[in-house]
Image 1 (cartoon, rainbow over the protein chains, first blue to last red):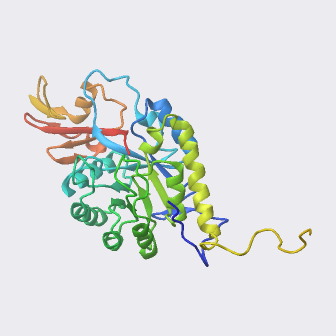
Image 2 (image 1 turned 120 degrees about the vertical axis):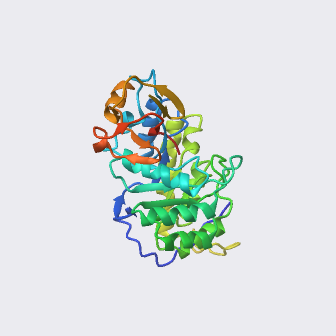
Length: 274
Length: 67
């Protein structure tokens, strides 16, 4: 799929091209999940290779019982080294999502940056935008910095921005599907309308998908399965890092105009031997 | 007394057990966790002060891998 936008008069400064989320600057535009890895060693190696500074975590019941010496994710990914983005994966109502993130805030010493996702269907993992909007309102009022996962509906994305979310994260395709960017046109409209960062979250399958997302003008990409589900997750994490950087630079550089054909070859038309 | 912890009933001897004492009993000392008692978050700095009573419902959570 050759969907790339021609960018003219881009005002963003290439020399200091940080991603700003809720007032904090990040040098990496790749955000990664920490699920589905073989073990914590692989998790850590993949995240190092990805260069990600923001990592998502889930909030779950602690095992009670024979787990005293069991290693924890936090030992492999110290919160001092990474920005944790606790999520609400598995929540199907606004109430559950809000409750989960309040626990996360307590767990992480008052940490405010969170990823809100409210699902509507366990089979497809489609987001429930009505519950998402309700939860976003409560969380923003409660002082959270909300990065919100949603459908690729530009109207909903704008509403979430107006509620006060600090980033809007439309899906490229469904969670864990690896189907890539199914509606680049909607994403383009969302990006054009937004005054907050737009990150593609979910659906990225390959490095090419990630590069296309960035060429569309996305401010970042969040992924988990595309890396963890690769045959070699650590190598794929490196590929994603390069794809995000290449896509970003391609966007900033401004691609050439597309023409069906061109009568202007790259080599001189004069000085030909005869 | 009986306390429902993460969906399982646990039996404890005696009364006047604080959340801190429970954390010790469950071998969770030093683990990063958050605790909800009967639907209300108990801030970590109140673990010493908050007493458990028969029939309390606790959720004890931590951070795990997720996307």
